[in-house]
Image 1 (cartoon, chains in turn cyan, purple, orange, yellow):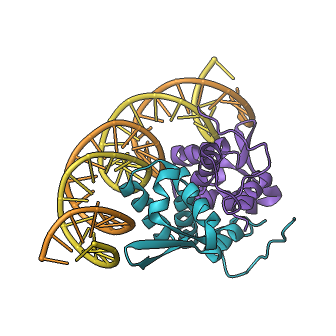
Image 2 (cartoon, rainbow over the protein chains, first blue to last red):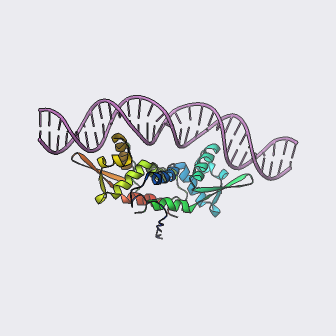
Image 3 (spheres, helix red, strand yellow):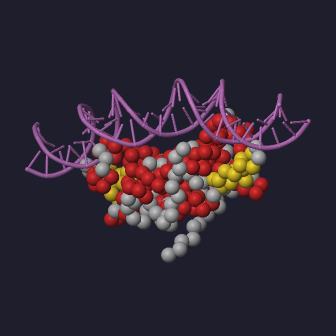
Length: 110
Length: 110
DNA sequence: TCGATGTATCGACGCTTGTCAATATATCGA
DNA sequence: TCGATATATTGACAAGCGTCGATACATCGA
C-alpha cells in the first residue's frame, strides 16, 4: 500500500533551501543516531514488538551484543528523541517516537 | 576507495519488520553520510544551486572549510550515492541523486 | 534481610572521523 | 611552454565512537 507522506512545514528540509549551521547540526544529530546498524536493528525490534514496546533485556540476544553495549545504544536513541524509556519495576520499556522519525523523514523530502 | 553498494531490492523499512544485519548495515551507511552538518549543508547548497548542480569551488566559502575538507566530504557523499560528480574541464559538477534520498526516506516510513 | 535480576555507569581499548597544510595531478589561457 | 587554477591525495593529529568487562545501583521475591 502506497503511503502519501505529509510534509509539515515545521521542520527544516535539506533540499528546499540552504541550511544554516544550527539547522544542519540539529538534523545531523538525528541522522547520527541512525548511523549505526545495531541502533537501526534495535529500533526495528522495538517497533515490531507487541504493543510497540520492548524490554531492554529482550533486545540483547537478537542483536548479539553485551548488556552494557545495548544499554549504551538505547541511551543514544533516547537522547536523540527516537525512543522513550519508561522504567517499570526492574524493567525498562522502550517505545519508538514516530513523530521524531517523521521529522527526519521530512528533512529528506524533495 | 570504498564504494557503498546501492540498495537494489527496493528499500528495507526500519519500522515494518526486524532488519537483518545486511539491511541494517546498508541503511546505516546511508545515514552515516547524512550525519555531519557540513555534508548536510553541502547537499542543500548543491540542491539549491541553479540547475541543481554546483561546482565544488563554489562550496568552500559558504561552509567555511578548507578545499581539502570540502573535497573529502563531497567524496563521502558521492560514495554513499547521494550525489554524482561529473568532471568538466577543470571543474567538478556535483548533482544530488534524489532517488537515493528517497530510499533513505522510505526506510523511515511508518 | 538477603540473594537474584535488570539496568546504568565506569574505565579502558582500538578504530574511525573531521580537519588542515602540503603536495600531486590535471586542465586551461596566454 | 609556462603559469594559474581546480581538484584529489597524503600524512598527521585530536576527538569521538563502539565495544567489553567490571562494578554500582535499584528492585523484586522469598
